[in-house]
Length: 94
Image (cartoon, rainbow, N blue to C red; front, top):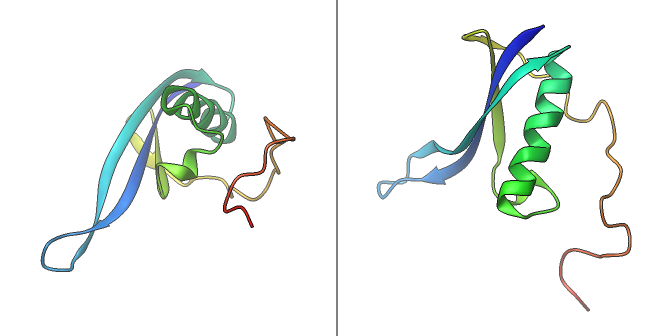
């Protein structure tokens, strides 16, 4: 099993209009069987820390390092996640 570091970033614009990535939080996963499991565990920790139902409310992208080396993230759409709070509707109300 490898150790992973999952970094969550928000895309922002600088004062001169150039886009840059701002680190929101880095989550260390000490052991995981795969990159996908490490990402899922890091997403859950990020959501708990920020008290949000979906990490994408506070970050736009994430990057993964395995044992200090950057690795490709698995497709985030590959495995649909169950809603934590199925009775709550997020977004604008009509």
